[in-house]
Length: 99
Image 1 (cartoon, helix red, strand yellow):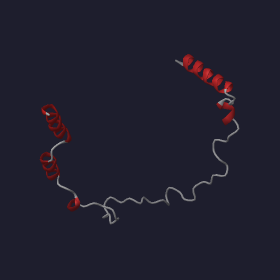
Image 2: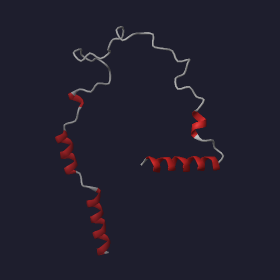
Image 3: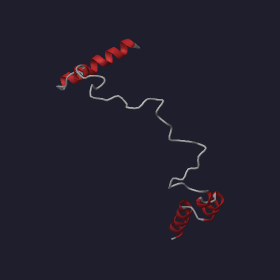
Image 4: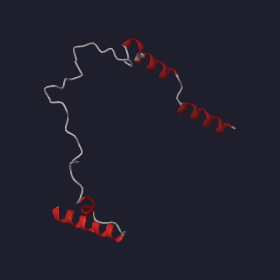
């Protein structure tokens, strides 16, 4: 498994070099893993507080209530009473055969 993976990597690197692209290792060799400019967080774990409290009532906008939900039975009833597009096509095909 490792041998086939190594051969594939070598094949890919050779293909990249033939296209004029440097190997991936040279692209990333001089890049620092962690940016020195990146600051550490200013707060500690003890200072941070969870924003989600499951026992508190959520008053955010955009919540849906049960009143605004459509009853599934109504939707199913509407779907059953509406003819399907395929049944309309069958009727058209029957008309073509008779004319």
